Length: 117
Image 1 (cartoon, rainbow, N blue to C red):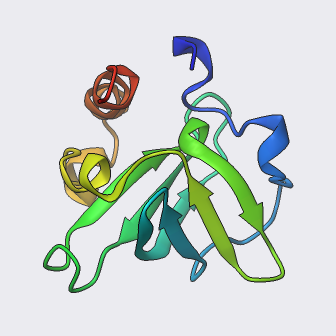
Image 2: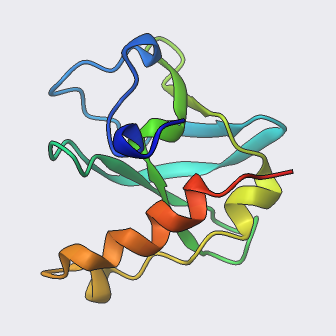
């Protein structure tokens, strides 16, 4: 994935502007991780926030739009190209730090751009 497109929905993912993804299930490459509690369509800064529920103790994780490989609107499921462990190890999303702080997203960009094993 190139650095420039981590915050953009990939054309093959099937995202349509204006689609409300809140409540959709999220599937990592190796299983379910939670449900979408927030999403952004902001150009150059699109992302999902996933409520992981009991899986990782109620943690909210941010997934840049570029990690999405497919959106199934019929099943209301979003498939991402990361494993559960990669998502679990990501920085935790903090709504208070995010609000009004454009540089906050950079820590997520650094994490998701690094090569994963």
